[in-house]
Image 1 (cartoon, rainbow, N blue to C red):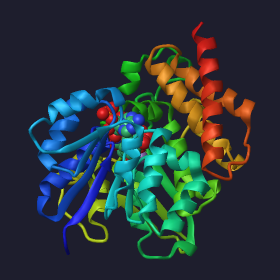
Image 2 (image 1 turned 90 degrees about the vertical axis):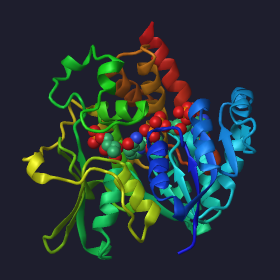
Image 3 (image 1 turned 45 degrees about the vertical axis):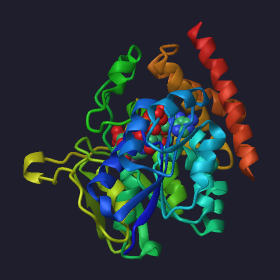
Length: 387
Ligand SMILES: NC(=O)C1=CN([C@@H]2O[C@H](COP(=O)(O)OP(=O)(O)OC[C@H]3O[C@@H](n4cnc5c(N)ncnc54)[C@H](OP(=O)(O)O)[C@@H]3O)[C@@H](O)[C@H]2O)C=CC1
Ligand SMILES: CC(=O)[C@@H](O)[C@H](O)COP(=O)(O)O
Ligand SMILES: [Mn+2]
């Protein structure tokens, strides 16, 4: 096999840096074409010096001077701003890591989809928000979408025997987050610091808050419905605090196929990078005797209403998931800025869903317009709750 040409969108984040760690361990097989970061110039410049991509882009336009300075004398090309992000994403490659957080990553991912390579797909918000529009673009470009999200990557692996028609249901596991055992009222005064302290995974801020509200699992139910063509009833969520089993597929004959591994994102990332082969990673080997016990329980949608709201949005269809996702992105940001409380996140999402409902989203323009309307509504509610 020849050298694989790669781009990493969101290279300075949690998924992005772990992706580059794996590439660094397997240097002979891979060559970087584009690296895209958001605002972290120092880390992006260090990555560019190490991996020497054709183009390095920082999304924040005002940081172009700082990036140029950091790369002075290296001979490395760099650029800044939204247009440059889209240009970098559109450069033809064999494999793109889509790891920008939020709907801001949708258009760069679609630019990558258009050249028809493999998309290692972490940016769940893009698929939740753009649904059919996104999947149509993938089909038209004959691109290959490989899920990086640990549960969906697990399901993909457990579906590998090709019997998709004989599936009764799939099971996505959930750690339960840092407040798994908290009462609803106990969650009222929770601080961003406490909510960011995930019991198992080390991740970026937005997904960590989503795990704490369990909106992450709600987004993942919608993500699974889109990726695997399943209805809500066929997607079960099971709380499993050890996060050793990532996903299970239950077949018509009673067989259940599961994927297990230490909770380490390098495992699913490496799976998508080498697919259909496998490569080694430095992730810790699973030692079940040391884990000792695996626990499971049903999720509580009363204490964690975000999960109920996400399912309702999936079942309502059309633009409801677009609204849910946009309102959640705004509410999470407002919580991290200490403008609203922890329980306000789901409260705002519910109110915005009631206001905007599920209008049709036939194309990208409609998705982006609805996303913008939901953000405006959520911002208004966050400001009112902050007052
Ligand atoms: N972390 C994890 O373990 C998992 C993450 N995911 C999903 O993967 C995605 C990434 O998550 P994670 O890595 O944790 O997030 P991080 O917040 O750690 O990283 C986000 C990345 O996006 C970049 N970025 C932010 N804004 C822009 C922009 N406008 N244009 C271009 N790049 C931008 C950031 O740049 P900078 O930091 O330089 O500002 C950073 O590189 C999310 O959708 C998440 O839900 C899914 C499963 C597991
Ligand atoms: C690693 C990964 O895939 C995350 O999405 C993880 O699932 C978050 O943990 P929760 O199960 O607590 O949402
Ligand atoms: Mn996940």
